[in-house]
Length: 240
Image: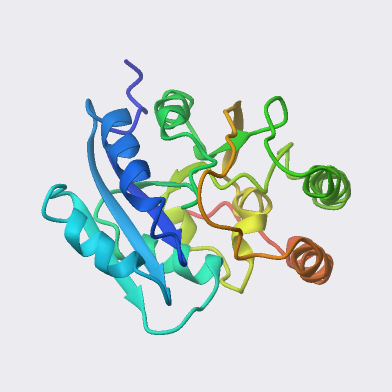
């Protein structure tokens, strides 16, 4: 076993109106990490359905389940950041709450950690289960982003990631930052690794994020992150 392999994991799952998906996904996360000390943090981002009450009921069965709530919806990036701030362990795994990310892939991300690695990202390219429009927009967005930011990541939009908590909290915070984590980690000098992961069909509910809205906002954010990269400095400092 690698000495760099995380031994404790906080799993952060942002959710909004996912009442029919939470129970099965929590069971899968718990099973996938049965040999790893872990906690599961669900961030309820202003849900208006029975998501919160369902999570509270599930806490009776899963003692490692923690539930954090936003009084109103603040968006996925803010929900992820809230979960990371509440996390107890040094390494944090994130995945989408709709069940399209497979928790069974989390151990693959854990095994990919080596010296200097601060983020391991999932790559869904071989098994994408989305509409044609979403797949095409994702390919275009990833191609443009990769060319501009050179972030060494083929699929930055995948919700399944593993990263150092300290490194994440050291990043500049802005809405939608979760789509640019590899570029931001690289900006601070951290290494990035990608591994192939599964992608599944959504079984219940519908997406809370519009494809066109994400594309427009992503373009604006892309130039902002490129601006941050150009102004980054990585000094080699020591105490005298």
